[in-house]
Image (cartoon, rainbow, N blue to C red; front, side, top):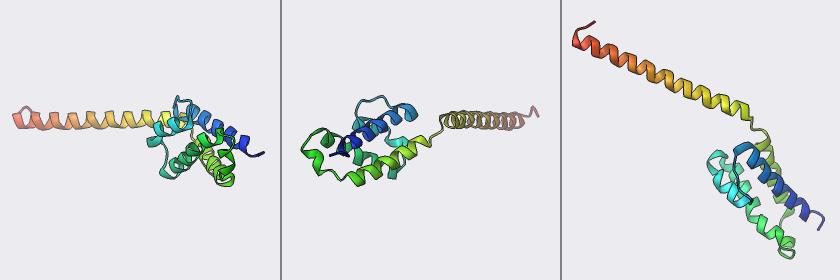
Length: 124
């Protein structure tokens, strides 16, 4: 029974990491994981779902005894390791550079189409 509050604190830490790193604003792990599904790799998502399924059972005193605490601890550690490894500044920079790359490509495509049109009309 000493590990049961540990599972609950790990679930709470996972919810907090999802809020901090991915911006998911839900109170329960189940709702947070479902909203962050597309931002998580499949393996991490499955581990987080395993924790989310155990969240309700961990709150109940008798059902808490049925939980596989080793498996849940490993799942929690894996999810938290992934979430702590996310660099928010790098994600923002990547988004910004992707936007600039798309903008540059669109300007290049527009200028090529303009030159082709001007050549076709005989202005060049």
